[in-house]
Image (cartoon, rainbow over all chains, first blue to last red; front, side, top):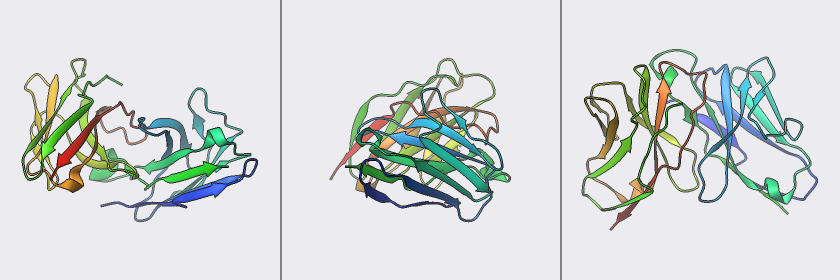
Length: 118
Length: 112
């Protein structure tokens, strides 16, 4: 099946620093990728839709200046948490769907990034 | 997206079949029924999806009611590795460019 690689899997940073998370589709192209966050024992919450070559679309309540998304190619999207604070500590997950073929209706997820801000 | 209703939690003995129910009484004619699961500390993974007919794959079976207002995910022999949160999600047609909207899902515990 299709593989989405997310890196890093875990990051610990000091308050005020910025953290970049990468999401790569390894064996397919994706014009659209999605970013979710998840708090302990809660469900996934959509943060934004990342569109290749254009601006991301953010969900209501998600600060676009804090969570910078760049989708520079058909296989890579990045999420940068700027000036991270302890309340940004969470599990961040990306996903992507192949642009064609039978699997185009299936979303493939990365393994997630656990961010801890001290 | 049309809403789905699932039990918060279920428990199963290892090597026994598990039937995970999902109600979706407001499903529209073009909605596909998708199931994903999330293992502890992992991203979700696709399990199965269908429209009207029952579906089988190597992971599970999906039984869809004739009126499509409910469905059941069937794990034929539960293993400890099947302990996860299972999400039933409706998705309109071939909508690859729209995100999945996750509800609370069903937390499945498997007892050895």
